Every structure is written in C-alpha cells, then in structure tokens.
Image 1: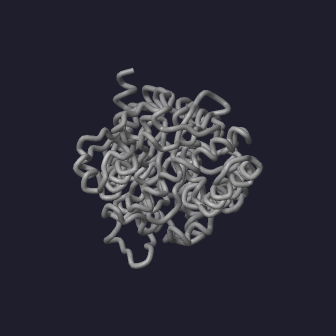
Image 2 (image 1 turned 45 degrees about the vertical axis):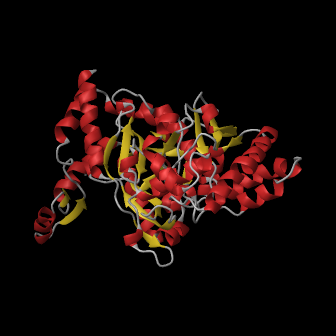
Image 3 (image 1 turned 180 degrees about the vertical axis):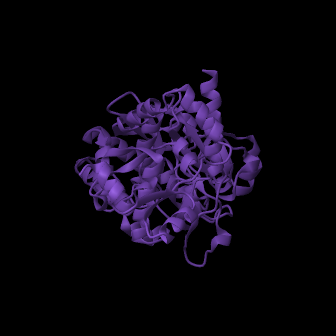
Length: 464
C-alpha cells in the first residue's frame, strides 16, 4: 500500500495552528490532533517583513552575519590604560547601553559616574561630582569597541583588558571585574569602592599585564566552551570559567618576580565573576565582526543603561532602537525588595547576544539559585531561544541537550514573526545612587526595540 493510500484509508490525522477552537472541533469528532503554536507577526511589522524579503536574500545575509560571529576566536592578549587605546578626553566617561545624557541617568548610573569622577580626582566629594555631572562627556562603551557590566562606566585612567581576534583583526576592551557587593558598576561610590579601584589600577592591572606578557595570549573561546560543560552559563555563573582561567594564570603568576602576586592570586580566586568581563569582551569581538552585512536582521547589540534598553542590527549599522528599560523579575538580597530595584542595566546582555547567559541556562541548573526559577524552567528557556536564533554555536555546547550548540545569533525578523522575546539573566542594581547590588533575576527584551528595528531595516533595504 502506498503512503498516499495509507493516509486516505487510515485514521484521520490533523495538525492545527493557531486558535484552539479548530483543534477542539476536530477532537470532538474523534480525530487525533497535533497542535502547533502559531502567531501572526507582531502588529505593524507585516509590511516591513514583506519589504525586506522582497528586497534582499535574507537567509544569505543572515548566514553571512552569524558566520562572522561564530568565526571569531577571541584571545586575552594584554592590558592597557583606557585613554591610551580609546578616544577619551580627561572628562570622557564611557557607559553601558545606548546613548545617554546626565539628566536622564538612573540612580546606579549616576552613582557609578560619581564614583568614577572621585576616582579620577575631578571631584573631592560626591556633592562636587554631582555638580560637575552636566559638564562631563558621556559615550556608550559600544561606540568604543568596549563593553561594561551593569553601569559599565569606564574612565580614562582605568586599566582595561585587551581582547584580540586570533582569526581576524578585531579588538575589544573591558575593565577588570571588581567582585560582588558594593562596587562601582552597581552604582556604589563609598571610600572602599574608590580604594579598590585604585588597587586595581596600581596592583592588579600591572601584575596581570606582566603575567600575560610571560604566559602568552589566553584562549577565551576555549575556556567558555569548557565552562559550559562544567555548569556555567557565561553571564551570571562564571565559577568554572574563572577557575579555568586561574589555572592558566597561575604558572606565570606564581613563577614571576615582584610584589603583590599572592594578593592578585587570592583576589581572582575569591571572585567567581572575574571571568564575566572577559566573556563580554569576547562577545563584543564577535558582534563587531558581524556588523554591517547589508540586509541582515541579526542583532549585534542588546544593552541597557538603566533608563533605556537598546538593540542594533547588522544591516542597520550603528543605529540604536530603544524602549524603556524593564524591571527585572528576581530574587532579592537581605531586606531588599522590588521597590528598591532600578530598571534593567548593563552591557552584559552581550552574552545572550552571542548565545550565552539566558540562552545557555540549560547548561547551568545551579543558576536558578541565583536568578530564580527552576532547573526545568531553565531548560525550557534555552529551548525557546532556538526559535529566534540563526545558528547553534559550534563550540558552546549544552550537555543536557545532547551537546547541542547554544542558540546563537538573534534574528529580529524571527522575534517579530513569533513574538518570542530574548531572555536575559542579570543582576539588579538598587535604584538609589550608592546602594549597590540588591538582587538578580530574569528579564525579557522589550518588544518595541524589535518592531522599530525591523521597520528601519525595511527602509534601509528600500534605499539600497
């Protein structure tokens, strides 16, 4: 009997998409039904999607963009002073997220900028720094081949890690991670915060520069891939990655000459988030390589400044598409509650943009103890992200999913077609300047960013 005859003579089999009423009607007649999820494109994007697909080979453009992303091979090669490798005047301060003015700064962003002005010696007191605030120059880290967690503030004197692409000519920068608690990136500026920043400048940075000169470049992609096999997600859990990194730093660190080396060892060993800034800079290498592909709807930045959430697309270059930053649904420290929380903040969503963090939660069941949810829910979140991504990362694997590559390369067109929004796991900063970290949790990117981006891409391809 042919396949067609079997279909015609066997029990009726029906697949439905969309509203449940259709499935319920068929089931009432005794037929088996396979239900599938389907939604029309998000309102206002239908014409834009049609225009894009009519004007360009969207599949080819996106394959080019995501191929560039996963084709990078970031290595930590050295240390530098921020003003020596980025265009910065003495009153230039880089920050996380899309462009921002002083008057629009949230509490933690303003607190971090106050701390950075104190650190730079531009002000002697927080009050002097606040008065100086309207006169400083603010610029997004993303505009300078850099990324910064939470407030993401980089000031001219800060030491930055230099990350280079061994497979190309890309370079990116990130500050050294301060640890958890009351730290600059969460908007704290107490004397001990400034003292730690000075120690990072005068001790940690120089020692690591010597270690990297002695030990050679460190392959970050390899470390991240191994760490996913050991329970990390690459965003809020970097314990395994930091341990793997320390194994490579240890021989030249212990075997070198000079003071403070044991102090540096203890600092890195005691800071499970030390690797985060390096993971972010590795991601920045990838998205910058993927930028500028005509017609591509792949996301090349997701970033938040505590006031707005912004994205960029490969096919629209440097343009930002923004919406109000959402509040994170999370777990809170001590007596803090949602009333104490600032809106979402930080460049660290670069990790999700390249297939880590919320997109790799299935690899990190322990992460739910930090950001909330359940282990099975973490798996479901990762599975949902395959619906809106272009590839599975060749080196970042999820053991529980039979070593399937993490969902990589967010496609804004798929986001508006499906209504599935990128999920991010993140820390939560207190909304008042100086408070610091109050919790951690999970948040979805605002839908308005993606509808704007797709509409702008349609206009871009129409002009081309």
